[in-house]
Image 1 (cartoon, rainbow, N blue to C red):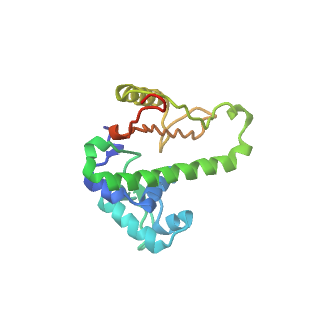
Image 2: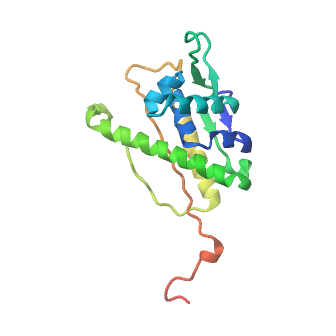
Image 3: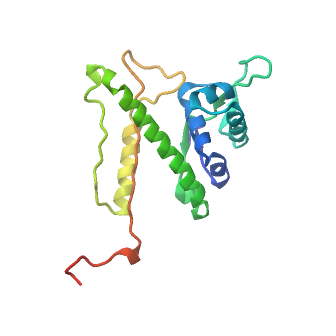
Length: 199
């Protein structure tokens, strides 16, 4: 794991399992450092709410103060990491309520991002017309095949230049977001019933 990543454990997950904290952390990662007031304006929240949740994010190590910015009591904050990793097996089944809260917050953020993109799609330059998709493919995989698929997808994405502060890119390179939802719909064993006409 690089220093630019944070791997959630049961304690840090509790600190991030809140919809506004997920949105605030994403905003800091996407737009760079901000004050509680700027975050409140961007997210349609009160400064009191963003100030409180910034302190919580700082307590759990997700944000840090940005030195050399601001005047007086104004505090600037930046994301401490570019990426958050969640391994449900590592975190453990006792944390399932926090995992669900966190993942629902991430899913809502993904839906907002798609909505924003759809609103801007009509202005997409011609050269980008074939570079997007909103698709799904229904597969039937074993757990081992699903893991192989997930690993292959990560490896493919890893071949390309990641965005972030200080990243140099060729002319014409634009922000390009890949959102992946790999969702096994596994039925409990007692839900498996014979198909009609076979029993």
